[in-house]
Image (cartoon, rainbow, N blue to C red; front, side):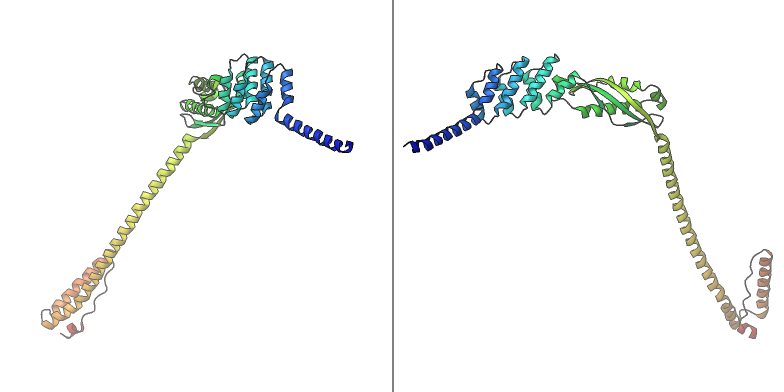
Length: 336
C-alpha cells in the first residue's frame, strides 16, 4: 500500500502545479500585486473580466499606475474603453502627464479624441511646448520686371491642442506659405526691392493669417535664402519673337508658293500662245500658195509683202529684237 501511495501523490502534486500554472497565467496575480503595491486598488475579478474581454491587463494597469503616480485621475473603465476603440492608452496617459507638467489644459476625453483621430497626441503636446521649425521647399516666383526669384523659408509653428481634431496639417501650412511668397514677389515692381528687403515677404505672409483652420499656430516666418533665377520676361519676349518670326516665314513661304504657281500658270499661258502663233505662222505659206493658185495674189504683191517683212525684220534687229527667219516662198508661188 505504501508503494502505491507515492505515485498517486506525485500525480496529484503535478496536477495541482499544472492547475496553478494555468490559473496564474489566466489571472495576472503578479500584475495585481504590483498595482496593490503602487497604491492602485484593482479587484482581481476585474482583471479576470479583462481576460474574458480579450484586453491585455498590462496595457491598462501600467498606464493606470503611471497616471495615479502623476496625480491624474483617470478611471479604469475609460482606459479600457479607449483601448477597445483602437486607441493607444499608454501614449494618451503620457500626453496627459506632459500636458500637466507644461500647465497645458488637456482632458482625457480630448486626448483620447486626438489619439483616435490618428494624430500623435504626445507629439502634439511636445510641439505645443517646444515649437517646431518647418522648412519649405524652394518656391519660384516672378516679379513684375520679369526676373525670377527662388525663395526658401523657415516657418516656426506651435501645435494648437484645440484644433488638432479636424485641423489641417503641416502640408497645408507649407502650401499656404508658398502661395503667399508667390503673391508677394509677383506684386513687387522690381526684384531688387525684394532682395533688399526680404523681410517684406515675412510681414505680408504673416498678415494673411495662413494658420486659420489648421492644427498649428504660426509664430514666425523667416526667409532663409533668396536667389535670382532666370530672366523670365526676356525669355518670354524671345519666345514671342521666335513665334512671330516663324509666322512671318510661313506667310512669306505661302506668298512665294502662290507667286511660283502664278508664274508657272503664266508660263503655261505664254507657251500656249506661242504654240498658237507658231500654228498660225505655219498657215501663212499655205494661205499664200492658195492665193497664188486662185489668182488673188500676184507676183508683184508677193514681192511687196517680202519687202515689208524684210523692213520689219531690219527694224526689229536695230531695236535689239530678234528677227524671225524668213519664211521660204512656196514652190507654187515661184511657178506663178
